[in-house]
Image (cartoon, rainbow, N blue to C red; front, side, top):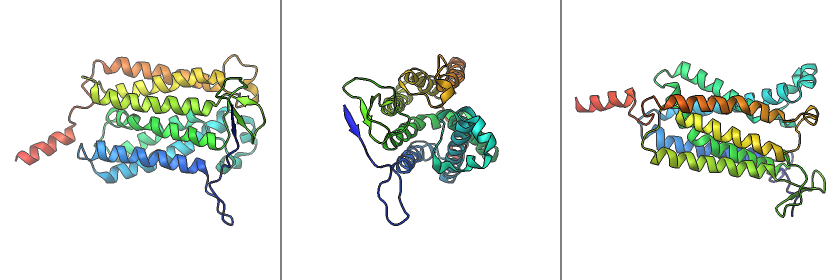
Length: 275
């Protein structure tokens, strides 16, 4: 087994103590931004300024959605009685399902300002990189010794010494590895598939991420006391609609044009060059 007692803070100087979680979160978004900038926006001749706006929308949507998701789904009674505590995000409490919903809302708000993009064009390309961000966030959970698994005697069990002395499933690493694998798979799928209908990448992302999340929840400790007596956890219940949505988009995409086909924006640029 592996004894884990890493401090959540990188270092501390006076009152300044940057956290591993924040570093992992930021690194995930930096890499995702770079991929979209170099492989999508520059390649398809879109403005980098639009990507900057998309980045800010996505970060805000992730944080706000994840916080509200945790407060509403896991501790609603407490936060309804202490609504100001919702703002105390540094105390912990983020839910990935809420973060996903927040990103969808922020994408809608982005498209209201940037009408040259279609929804399927945008979400297909965003889902190429979101798996990497999600994986880095789970690495941050490892550094915080949080969202750990049930007791186990497996040789790779972690003893999170900041929690207790019980060997447990490192469910954060299970999720991180699954999200990194999904990230790699979608990159290969994007490059090698002969035809990818509009919305297919978005659909496969939802199917793969939330199916893996559903099964990995069986190794995870309950995140709220009310889950203990439930046959399945809140995270599994919330995953089901996302899986169904993914199936819908994959099936629908088979009848649609290839999402990698030149957009109207690119066609206009080609015509202007010829003229």
